[in-house]
Length: 98
Image 1: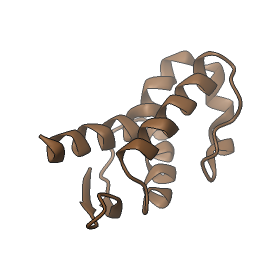
Image 2 (image 1 turned 180 degrees about the vertical axis):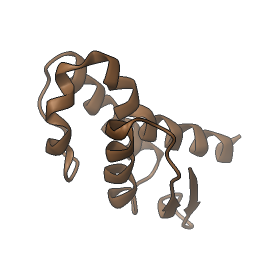
Image 3 (image 1 turned 45 degrees about the vertical axis):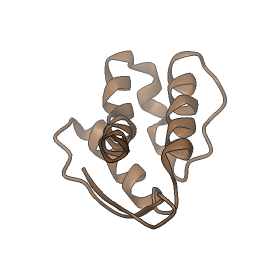
Image 4 (image 1 turned 90 degrees about the horizontal axis):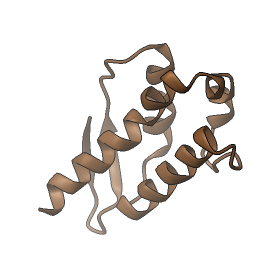
C-alpha cells in the first residue's frame, strides 16, 4: 500500500496491490475506494468499528460498501484478511509519523 497525504495529514491518494484471498482483495478495494480524505484517527476508528462488527456482532460500520462483506463474518479465519487493508494503512501512516 502506498499513500500520499495532503497538508493536513489526510489521504490524498492511495495505491493498493493486495496479496490476499478474494475476501481480502474485496476489502482492500472497499478501503481504497473510500479512504481519500481520511486521517489516521479516522482510519483507526473505522478499523475498530470493523473489528467489533466482525468479532462481537457489533453494528455494521459506517463504511461505503461494507455490507458486501457480510457473508464473510461467519468465517473468523477471514477476519484478518478483511482487516488487512486498514492495518496496512495504519502501519503506513505510522511510518510517516516517526
